[in-house]
Length: 446
Image (cartoon, rainbow, N blue to C red; front, side, top):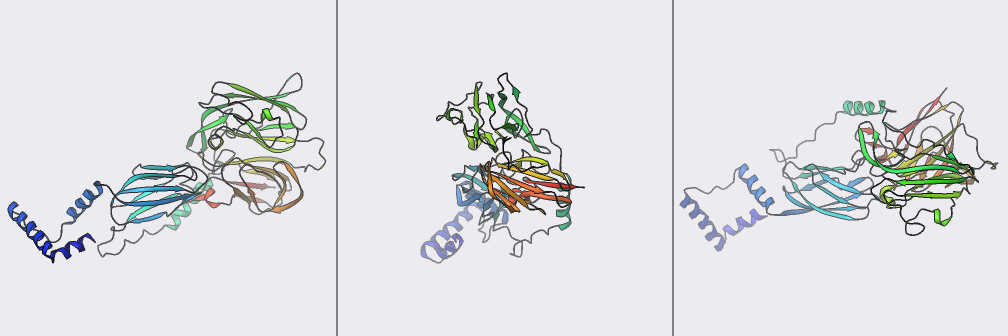
């Protein structure tokens, strides 16, 4: 557009004067004007324009889990103002290949500037697991064309290489990693019959999959924290020791407790400060699949790992289903990625059963997003929700578990083989390099 205006000006009176002034200037310095600048000179000119300030704006919307648009076209290289609008339920960022990072909390907006080169630039979300889930994109400079003026053809995809990468990753399952969460912690039995547990909240390094070690918050050094088990009528005591650099509390999610034991800072108790301890004590009143977790800055501390299962049984119940295997699966998402019991595929743990056995799976969602858990090959009989037995159980192959929900299912190991079990929001389970995150398997053996 600027060049067109310059040509137009050359045929006007002012344009003639302007052109004669340029010719005279070149004559004085011993040069001659050139109708077309050399390619190098054009690049230098474009760089100078870029250095002068933003040449345009880029708007990116982030959602769970992706970018819109993921392929962005700009006319020229230079500095661009970037606006990131986060429509998702968790923190997202745009991390460009040159190291520029623009982040936004859930339902918020972030802005910044990035310098796009002539070759364009890729970007990802750097939150662990998000790029693997598909949060990747690219800025393409439209001027980057072949000599013919046509776009360069895209490199062909090597199907055999894609298949090899996928198979290689899947073959690692179940991969070994340091640390195992959700293990039952036996209580200390006090003289008066009270069952007592001590839980220490601290910062640890946690391996979510082979070679991926992330900072986490943990109870007793594991993610999830130890699994607590009690019976209706038990008198229990949970002593929280806070070794975090920030305040925290424990909320017994789903349990009916005295108000002062509910664990909500500023409402039912003071926050437990670093270096302090607090004792929760009450009589267990209701059975079911329950949880315990932080209720201080919970949107941060719970996804970071301050979570655990609290399973309560009722010895007097006559309608409790009998299962050969009782398996608790805590699903979570956030800074540690998409995890099942604190691990991402291929480091997730399979459920192994013998043909004809009955498995009870207690799904517990401690994350920020919904997770529909899909089992291949065998239906799931939904028997309880949030600790309460359903009057009419029903079959599902994809069980939706919302944040905070607990869903109990019965699975009959009626079919031999390895059956995939995964979140069916596919960006939580598969990415460009194959399966990851919320994927495991039910293995039925003879």
